[in-house]
Length: 275
Image 1 (cartoon, helix red, strand yellow):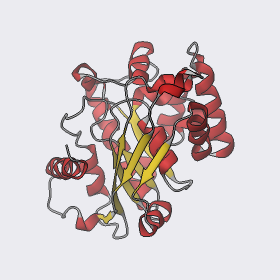
Image 2 (cartoon, helix red, strand yellow):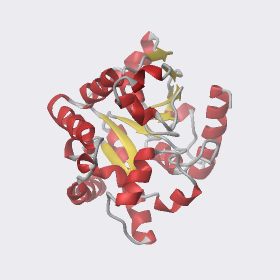
Image 3 (cartoon, helix red, strand yellow):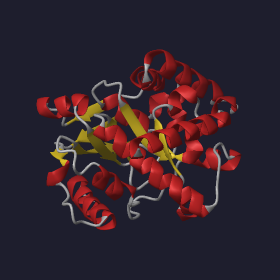
Image 4 (cartoon, one colour):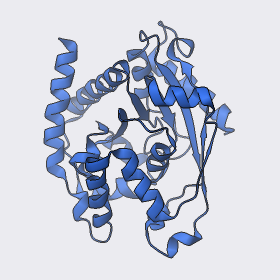
């Protein structure tokens, strides 16, 4: 009954959110969004991000994809944590991953205007209240300005966030890979949002689920200009680092509070990347 309720909620939400398919209408960059959404629908998300990387001329250098890590990221249920201070990280991270169809990513709800094919890979979170704390993301600023997604009262948004984290956990428990950026749209060094702790708790009893980490190095607030020919020649290469995944029961314990889990995971992540 719980699973059916979560799925019904999410399907209703997706139908509502995709009414706001407006990113493709933005001048200059609108065609890029339209082409991306078309490619995602026809060939899948990996082909879509691959086309963007190719058009941008970005050199992508991937580290840490040893044999067992590749196997886990390609075939096992995984929660993948990564940094996302600007716009390009999510595209780069998906491009660096081994190809799989059951890949989903948690995003700000305002990005649900990216098109119906693209958003089929998205799980939205309402985080409007954090905008004032600062965001470097060009896409988030545009989404906020144009209000590309629906907004509700704080209590309803909180309820939807809880339901969508449950839906993300369901995706992992069904064998999928879910990407989450706990620092969200906040400035680098900000405390992680606690959704990652609740997500890990939601998959804790799934003994074959893994927790994985990635770090993207070399992005900037100007990465959107990588999509402009000639200009993109002046951008440096991007490095994507993967850590060896760990089974979720070896990362947290059953009695840990999700907020405490989040705090511990951030401390460990910062040590890993040398922050």
